[in-house]
Amino acid sequence: MQGSRRLSLQFLLCHGNSRHSTYPAAADANLPVLSLGCETACDLACHLLTARNAIGPFSDTLLEVASSVHLSGSRRVHCLLLHAEAKPVTFAIAVKQDPYQTYILSDDSAQSRVEVVPERGGIVTRWRIQGQDLLYLDTERFADPTKSVRGGIPILFPICGDLPDDTYTLEGKSYQLPRHGFARDLPWSVSDRVTDGHAGLTLVLKSNERTREQYPFDFQVTFAYQLRGKTLTLQQRYSNYSASPMPFSLGLHPYFQVGDKQQLAFDIPAARYFDRANNVGGPFNNSFDFTRNEVDATLTPLARREASFEDRARGIKLTVRYSEECSTLVFWMLQDKPFICLEPWSAPRNALITGEHLLSLEPGASLDTTVELVADTLRKENDDT
Image (cartoon, rainbow, N blue to C red):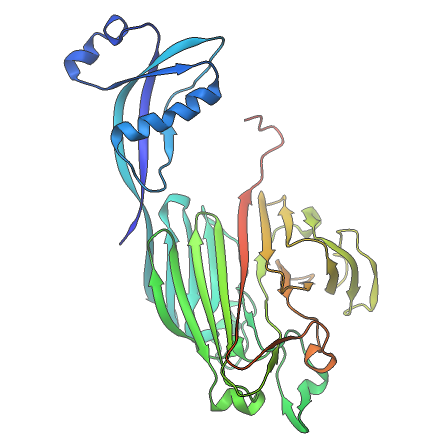
């Protein structure tokens, strides 16, 4: 197991020009005293780097200061270094069978973990931070391999949404593709694991006889899941190994677990929406009608590369950051289920037929794209810290 190191530093602040005059026992104990010339708290923060160097360089050093500092006016501060201890910031990967082989990525320092199931569409089934589950999962559907998973973070490829009658025509031949494509229903293979600097797992999906019956291209899709702190990064690469250009769409379908939907607040950079479940649309004002049984809203155009929502009932803020390939966000919810979906798509439904925002890769070409999911704790209204 590899990891970064955390430096735990405890010190006392004292005054005067000599450590012996203030802490005479320090000389006998041979404890280091760091003499810092500080006029402001900012100066003191800068000088803490000196404390780090006194112990030794560590990668990704974090300073934990066990003292309250208040500086008024110009004075010289001496830091009596009482204790210094290097602790590992550990990233780990474990494997369990439940009921499928599941890889558990963890960051102990942030109390965060992610579970990935390669054989069920390479899906993230769980993301948990400090005891709170951030993703919804329908466990009954998940346990039934004949059904698509409802929950976690399904992967959408080579289309997002559905086609009329699940059918499209290419070069005079008709093909059938299920809703959201086939990537979420096929087994993926593990190609790499990383525990240096983050907990990472890389999965690969390659074209085969089954995929070519639905989508006549040779391809490889690579997903690298990276967990560090409260951020889950999904780095993706799409490669065309065919002799002709490969049209496709890409997307993710995260199911975020939520509390009271009426206490959700959104910041989504879209100008307009169309809710196909209710056949209504118009200017978007960052709100949804949660009295409806279902909302299935396409949100465009996007003014920036991130969207977020606050779940005030649970004290969580979740942010979705996406690369420039994402042209569309989709919001989906069912009134009687404790989830919402905020989905980054490269193209809207039916793009394989209409060509709207459809991506295309030349033979031998690849496309790299990234989605980041960030979880933050909301500050309480009476928290003045």
